[in-house]
Amino acid sequence: MVVIQSKNIKYFNISALDESWGIVVTTVGRQLIPPHSSYPLSQHPESHIFNPDNGRVLKEYQLIYIPEGSGYFESKSCKKRKITAGTMILLFPNEWHTYEPDKDRGWVEYWVGFHGLHIDNRVKNGFFSPATPVFHLGFSSAILGLYEDILNHAAEERAGYQQLISSIVLYILGLVHFMYRNETFSDSYAVIKINEARAIMKQTIEEDISPGSIAERIGVSYSWFRKMFKKYVDVSPAQYQANLKFLRSKELLNTTNLSITEIAYKLNFENVGKFSTFFNKKEGLSPLQYRKEVRNIGKSS
Image 1 (tube, rainbow, N blue to C red):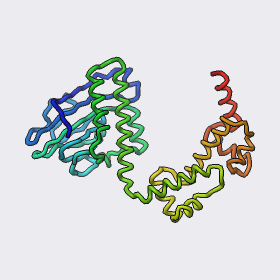
Image 2: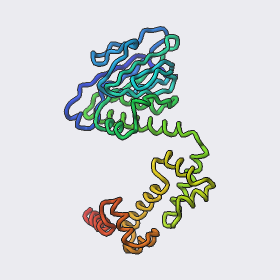
Image 3: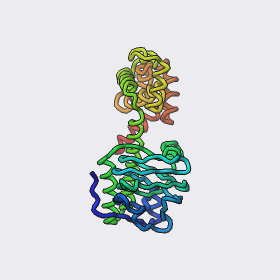
């Protein structure tokens, strides 16, 4: 059970220096909404005034975590749905939304508002979408602790606190993404097989083994393996192998005196030209240029 002795709400003045960090926190708060009470309990600035019957539109993002209680949420891009304990809601700027606790149950809510290029880029790249703003994560003491950290640092307002608390917000977003991805990938058989495949790939970096052969080795069809692997890892099996080979090539260039040709054949490239093309495409430098740069840095340090 979450114990809240009193509400704690704060809004921030943002400086140009704060904005230059790439993400800023605009508001943070927590409050207990008892059963059969009006909602919201607190008065907010005009920009954040909230009436559940009419909803509102904000100019910022907000992460709202409900560790206890239940209620409802609705937005322009998301139909009205039940909110249960352990739910995280991500509000988007310029997106109409409304939410409120059940009258007979109430809820505990934590929120943090923010904006900046860092979150804009994550939305642009598809990590978060107004179409899927609700994440059921379950009760998380880690997430509660992060909200409490933001509240505590905000109360002290020590130099640099805005950069610290906005970075905590990015960490919360990372946790939400990680927990939701792993919660939704409920096929434990697929995860076991994918982990078996990744172990084989890591053990055979210097061998010529195809994704099809790996699928056969773990006892699944290649079409199923490729589909599930890409869904879980975000890259195809062949791309994953190529990335492992690239990392191994950098290690060999950094830590051994093997020639470029020897490294190329050690990693099963047909010839040194294909290895150089592969490496240059990944690193933007030829293997020889990369080795020279790394070793020159080592000499000057």
